[in-house]
Length: 242
Image (cartoon, rainbow, N blue to C red):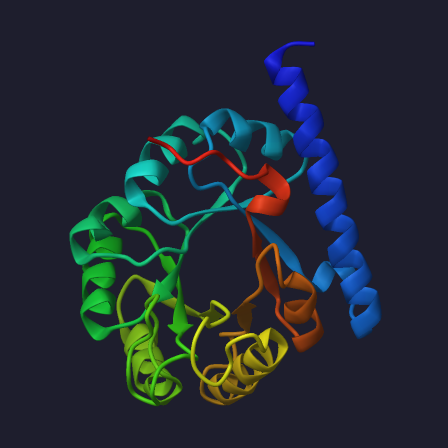
């Protein structure tokens, strides 16, 4: 077998296992499988893997570093993919990200909204935005891994909703490692769902809830997440570079 065939077999097997996990979690929660969208996080993996995944039916991929994502997105521009940017985003990378990302899931401050709006308009694109909620932060603080405290969601969402070139799609969180929700993933995701309910009262179309990764996707599905972001369980553990 060629390297490509071996890798295709690995990814086919891994993807099937993740699909099975999501289906089982949906059944346990009384939800339809089609209510949960799988986003495969392809960070550090080559464009060839993205191409294999697309052939296997994956339609949503995510990246967390612009320097990895930009060339990969360009190389895979012919594929029917939706690209999500999920990492902490510096304003000096916004122009690049606005060129290929369909959604930015890590919107967490007013300055970033302004920069994204400017570059989306410049690129003549509409960018979907998720407010990243930090459940390890004070109400109006910021999280260790980015994100705005729950108390800052409403104001930031209003800014996104009013900004030219941007579309408010919903909320995202990463299960916190510290604070009240450390080790309590399902409770964290349920808190995010409560915040989503409040958000939808003001912005009914902002119904996307991105939560859960390889280790805790079941808890995210149980809580009601609409999107799960899975990397390792699909792509495997990559040896650290350098």
